[in-house]
Image (cartoon, rainbow, N blue to C red):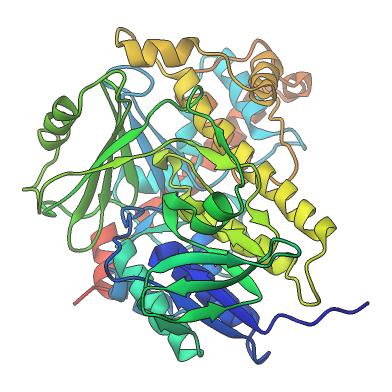
Length: 501
């Protein structure tokens, strides 16, 4: 039997998740006649500190048809080539996780094997020299990837650092131009059908009762629909990712913005540094079992360059995910679906992943459980793979002498992650499961950055003569160095491309 199609969608909560959902659905359903309402209360604050992103955001903006310079002006955005990790591999250490691969394969052999062969012969060139974004970031330069690029050494991704509140407002304008309606109200009660337990309507403090066919839960940590009403359980991952607090504060911009985010280890966690066009976003992610809030506050404030633009704001959280993000006729996005600490700027990417799955399994003719189950399976896979990538950072840390870091280094890790790490340590082989959010280059940046030394590598790497190998590697490095030298400094690029007003 063909069931009635979706006529009305209700998004509960605004902020970044709510307006990304509304914008993505408005684009997806353009011309369908489906109505979309967003329930957003001006009396409820949003977290609004997710200022750093990964390259998936570029694709989302392009999907919506946003003009990049206009978007960057309106959100005070800067470009991001990757994330720099300071002191993670020991005092004074620094390495970049770039959004790109390293080098190119030689004779069909993955690059890391050839690099390891050269190291065995006495070549101490860092792997970063074979990655264009790493060299650009080192000198504070930026250029967009050429659209007609034919050299794989010039291929790289980029992301943005922006004001999340401004981005939500920008998307709200986009969505409202496409017919999305916003109601300023609080949800007082969620009303479910007696027959099947589906959400039927929402009672608002304005006195209205809003009905819908599909509900999107963007209510933050409260998870008002999927968590509270439909009772989807929550999986706690704090035994792997123990940080449970974050202090966030904005500060004056006192130096040209860098084209990367910084993550710096502190006694009981790590500090972020996110430069925008008009200010810097700062925060300290820590574990309350290892450090008191006041001490963490002092640590944060003494380690920011410009004057703070307010008092640090405390956020409490628990890392983990809902057992399912889609239940009955409700889909949870953002914090309502789960939380991954911001170590690799994954929060907005997880919102995007949820929107993509909702679109892929959109219930145009009713809610079929097999579709919902598959969406949940894929959603779990994405969360778990992102989780494991974050756990790797803590497991490999070399900050010795602080209880928090020592305990993280000694913890047991998920079996899938332990297998990936063991295989790389054995033979420099990069295991990839399905469609992982972070690809080979990302994992390689962690292994190289933390100094993981494989016991062996692909034996075919020994078939190339040392002279030919050296020539090929030198040629790669020269091409990358020359390309980087042609790029302008990041601040100059921004000035000409999208300077905010």
